[in-house]
Image (tube, rainbow, N blue to C red; front, top):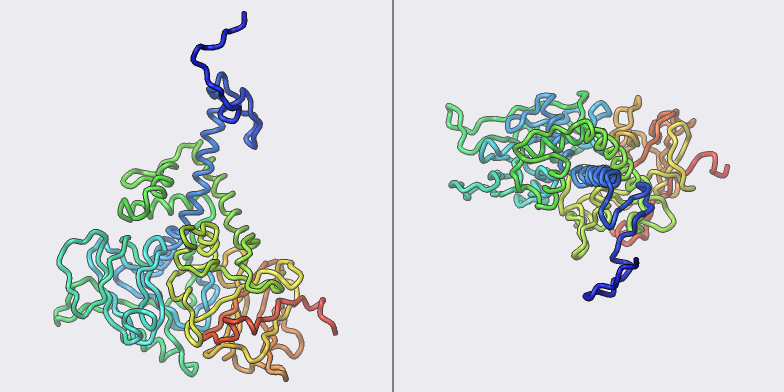
Amino acid sequence: MAQSQPKFSADVPAWITTPDTVETRLGALRFHQGAPDAATVKRVYDNLDFMRGVQAFMDGIPATSVRAACNGLEKIGVRRNRAIGITEDLMDARSLFLTPNTTTVYAFACIDLREGPMVFQAPAAVLGPVDDGYFRWVTDIGLTGPDAGRGGKYLFLPPGYAGDAPTEGYYVQRPRTNTLLVFFRVFVKDGDVAAAVQHAKAQANMYPLNATTEAGEPPKADFVNTSGLRFNTISANTARFYDELNEVVQTEPADFLDPERIGLFASIGIRKGQPFAPDERMKAILTDAVAVANATARTLLFDSRDPRAKFYPDRQWFTAFIGGSYLFQQGAERLLDARTMFFYYATGITPAMAMAKVGSGSAYAASLRDAKGDFLDGGKTYKITLPGPVPAKEFWSFVVYDNQTRSLLETDQKLAGVDSHHPGLKTNADGSVTIWFAPKPPAGRESNWVQTVPGKGWNVLLRLYGPLEPWFDKTWKPGDVELASDLAE
C-alpha cells in the first residue's frame, strides 16, 4: 500500500539527502534511511583519524623541528639555559641540520622558561633570530635586532609572567612558549675563523635573571664546540613524529597555539597533562598517516604547484619562502602549503628574511632540477654559471644538500660547497664564474668543483650576502644547473 503524502511535507532538494549507497575513495559507504551502517562508521572514523594524523604532521612540523633541534643539542652537552653551542671549526655533514651554511660561524642555544626569566647577552655585530617553540619569531638579535649590532642583554619572561622584572638595561621579550631557540651568525673577517669564535665567546652569555656568582657577577654560560660532532637536529618522518609532538605539547603552556590546532592534536590523543598512548588501531593509522604526510611535505618541496615558487619563468631556481611573509600570510589568507614547505626544508624565521634590502642581509635561491627539469643525480656531472658581476656586496656561496635529509651532502669535501672567497677560485674571461658538480672534478676544474655522490639525489642553495639591485630587479639571474652531456663542445 502506497504511503500517503504527509500533510506537512516539504520540497526536499536531492542535494541535501544521502543515498543508500555512495561510492567514494574509501569504497562504498552505505546508509539505512540516512543512518550509516557499522562498516561505514568504521571506515569513516578510520579515515577521520587518518586525515587528522596527516594534518597534525603538516601543522606540527614547526614545533617538532624546534624540539628536535633542542634535543639534539642537549645530547652533545649544549644544555638548556646553561650552554651555548658554537661551530669553532665551521660545520660539516657529520652534524645533521636543515640546510645549514658551511662558511659561517654559528652559535646556538635553547632556553627553557619553565625555570623562570632568562637573560641572553648578544655579542656585537652578529646576526640571527630568537624563535619560540613553534618557530614563531620573537625578536632578532644583533644587526637587525633592537641592539642594532651593538650587542646587549635580552630578557625573556615566561608566558603569563606576572612578577616584577627590570626594564632598564634590557630588551624585554614576552614569548608565548617556554622553549626558545636562539641562533646567530658570527661574521668571519679576512678568513680568521678563530677571531670570530673568540669574539662570540668573549661577549655571549646566558643566565637566569638575578643569578650571581660569589663575586657578584652573572654566571658564565658554558661553550660547546659542535664542529665535527655527530648529532641530529631534524624531526622524524615516521610515527616517532607524534611522540616528538607530544613532548612539545607537554612542555608548552596549554594555549601555546590557537584552539583549532590544540584541538587537532588532541583529536589524535595528544593532550596537555595526559599520556599519549595510542592503541594498536591508532598506531597503525598514524603510521600510515605520517607516511602520506611526509610524502605530501616532500611533494610540496620537490614539485611545488604554486607559481610563486619560481624566481624566473625560464629557470629552475625557486624560493622556499613563498609569498615573502615571515608569517606565511597574504592578506587574510594563511599560506598553508608554503609554511609546510619552508619548515620541511629549513629552520629559523625572522622578518629580515622578508625585508631584504639592497646591500644588506642575504638572498637565497634553491634548485633541485637541471635545466631540462630532471632531478639532480649525484653520479652525473653538472655545471652552473653565474654571470658577472655577481650582485653580492659581501660574497656568494653554493652549498649542496642531501635530498633525503635536507642536511649537508656527505662527501670527502668538508664544506660541501664553494664560495667566492674559496682559494684558487677561477673566474671566466667575461667575469662570470662556473662551478662544477660531480663525483670527481673535471680536468682543470678542481678549484671550481663541488663533490657529489653516485646514488645520492642532491639539491643546491645559492646564497648572496649583501644582494645588490640586479638581484632584486631580476636584470641578473643565475644560469640553470646544466648536465655536462647536454653542453655543446
